[in-house]
Image (cartoon, one colour):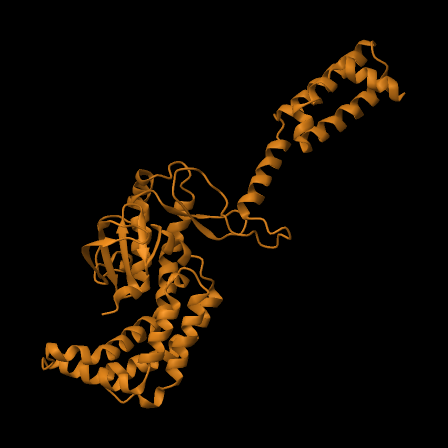
Length: 367
């Protein structure tokens, strides 16, 4: 009943969440970036929502907790709406539902529903009467544990993500499988701290569905989860199966998803503090160019170094005046620096102007 809050459809190298299609692994990667202060803000609301969850589980009257808990759920939704991957949710739809079901009457009806279900007296035809009550309990359980769930996910997966980030040699499905096998050994016990591999928090079905933006149905693997930590973990592992994995941007430090074996170092987000509003990838490309230009074996520098050697050799032989040689060296360096910053000049007159005869003639003119 209203499972889309934590349901994923996997098809090939994509995942569908709440009517939106992403490269598989996107949700898991974004979840790694949720800041600690955002999780703390979520936790403030979780504590209020957990009060209601406890009362519902105990079958007690929850009337006194409204509208505080309703406000906490809406505040939580506002936080989620600004925080990927939660912002991919249909926020207006969830707001409308929360405003509808977070009432004392829904809480009372849920206690009634749970009591009948526990005593096997609930009739099938009665279930629709408790729809709002069940939705209330669903939101309460998910939101009440959200901060803890997200923290546990990051605690378990950030270290693994760091290792996948360092897997520069082979960022393919096969490479990640080898790394995964060494990090998560196949021998494990469900009771010995291996919640990362728990199979008790999801269910799987296969359905034929028309994917967003398409006309024909595809057979997809649909997975329902009871917590966001299970959903994100599953998305991460499904991504590894097709060669998608988190990568930490060398500029902003955020995680982004790579979908091929290229050794990408920078994300496409805006670079922090850049007044020109350039992306990290744009800044990174410039850095890469600067590093190449500073390299000793840069072609433009090789031309300069060759000319210096010739000038020094002529001076040593006594066939070139030392004062003229100094002017030639200064001209050569200026031309080299100009060529590095001016692509048109580098491809045009640079090499010809750096010839010994041309350089000597220009130096003589300056004398």
